[in-house]
Image (tube, rainbow over all chains, first blue to last red; front, side, top):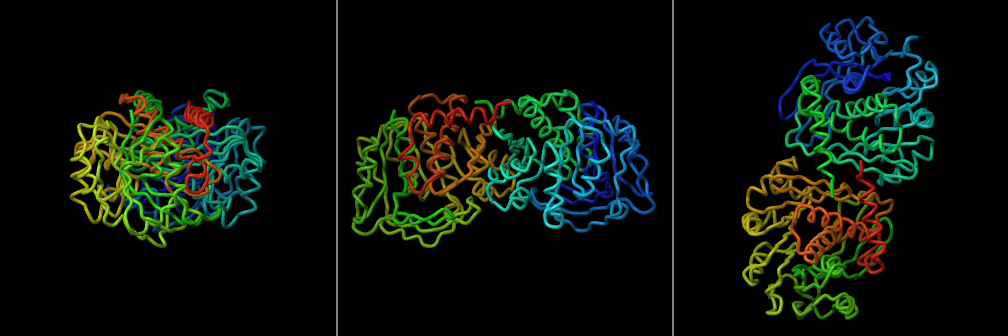
Length: 299
Length: 299
């Protein structure tokens, strides 16, 4: 089954202690779509400006990513520049130019509307809700968010969280959203609102997946060099939902496997800027690192 | 086999968002010895003052903890007071009165000298080295340290690290000691100095155990309420070495099991002040939480 992914498409300039990359392909929908494309076809919804390089479109199309839902608007593409210091868990924004993204209204093409697996990447929760009014009975909706919406669209955010199956967020966001330092309490509060699953991403420390009756702890892959963490969370999400769609199996065991496959893809993403490492990634490398994950936790 | 544990014996006053406890039993050697006593006999080396409550001695003796090496000196017992805010990973010291601990010189009684399993809890690395000159061919020496010695006894600390089998430290200490933000690089640097195993404790995020050819990631146990984290690291260490001594098996598989058992004991320690929870802990509860750990990581 294919996956519908709605989010940002961006051009990023990133500087880290290991180098820099300017005007490279980025955005939540891009990382998530590219990761999901390792498991099957993807339908992308987003917006770009007239400045968006053609080779980026060709790269996405080469991965069976359907771009019918990618709007091209007058103006410039969403641009983000930032840097990381030695603590790679913390991005420092230098400049965020929303450009055409500021008036983005997701329009779901007719051919996308019956898609059963949907990932609503980090955009305004009101737009996320609007997407759900345009689709027909999805089987699984996964939603991501960020601190900006926790502060500025608190009510709308809680409303969308109640409408979805799986909530993804990072540890700082979970603490902020639920006003507790304790991640178990935070997860319980979100689960109480409606979703069946909450996944809290903890950067280098891996992630925790909560259901009403289980907890799964996935470790971070111990990397010696993290070149650029941009997109790791979205790569995780894309790999996670891509694998679930390809197997069409929402059992606890398969959700756990999806978390590890998402983590595996994210661990490759951070080894280079933009999609650099994912572009070079072979199925054998993916399989081999998945096996390393198994070794990593075995006792 | 029994375990020799050298470290501090203290009276603590601790305040956390969940309550407070005053003049309660604490110190690295106490938490480690109590935890190790779940697996076998312990020989403790430390120092107390004349003010040390007798019931504390009785409690330790009731757990097969040999106190022949516990010196009683004129003056007051080492006293620490501090508090934790909602981020339980960070202790805030209010007052540290070394008292009799300031002139502590570990003397290893004759009956202790052939002990095969030794835990050198966090004390001056020069004293840790001195302990090693007093014992006969131990099979396993585990050492812990803290930021104070990293700054003030840098050379002596590296010297002792080269003399031991297993180094335990927390993530902030590993980064500081090895001058790198990356824990994999830090572990490699320590392993290069001599020890066969490095264990980096990451508080609520669990721990990482490194050898020259393997990495093991142990999750933190997801607790909804952490009452008081004091002693968690020493409880981990005591459970870890206590189990290894009881099995006398240093295979990779058994080291991994020891890490999980140490983590399990530490997860109970933080549920109450001082030794409150460990005192009530039953073998069934310990076994049951160990099994929960297995569920926690299975995929």
